[in-house]
Length: 264
Image 1: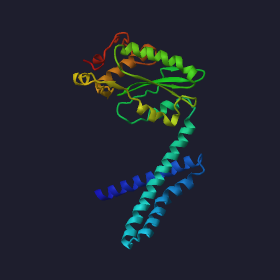
Image 2 (image 1 turned 60 degrees about the vertical axis):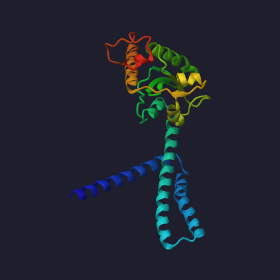
Image 3 (image 1 turned 90 degrees about the vertical axis):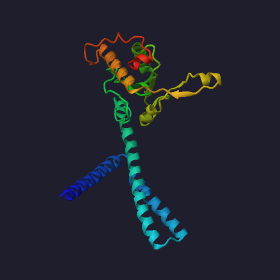
Image 4 (image 1 turned 120 degrees about the vertical axis):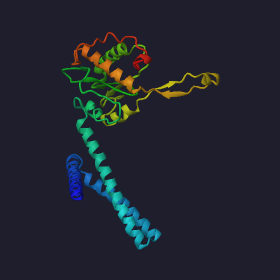
């Protein structure tokens, strides 16, 4: 009985995967007409290379059987990877330029510690240009969407507000402008850019000073530090009337050292 249930479950799971693949194909093919040829090429490439290698190396019939099974599986893997990459490309192209596209991309980051609330900390009601604030173990992120000239001043004001909450702390603030202008980060590269944002700080150690070397370590917040930081940033947002719970005073955590951010 248990085996039958497991078999039904596996069959249903397999049919769902095939259904999803079909939906992804239809969605992507509507915008990318070269998709069938790319998928065919991705599937056939390892098989053709394997056949040529088999003829040159004079494989035995048993080797042919095992290698063809392996090559077909490899072709399916390449086909799936190609479909996923093309679907992502089409998705980014459709999203680029739309209000809120940047935060929708970062909202899907599944790395531990990253948090990007959907509510912007600044928005222009007319142009829909906006600034979001996020956090992670590597620091604080300010994400601007829109023209650099229009979002530069709001970004600077947000940086000053953050300093008022984390004053005395060495927590880095990374400013990222998303768009198609020169110097801006394209939507398709946004996730990669955020994950690469890291600061390295010198290590003060007697041995290093004596030997005139300058070792460095990556700045990383602890879990307790990150929780404290998020609480204080939420308090700051409430102070500015953006829907944070009442009863918290953001004027209290002024001039905070990093030790204080650890909750010590």
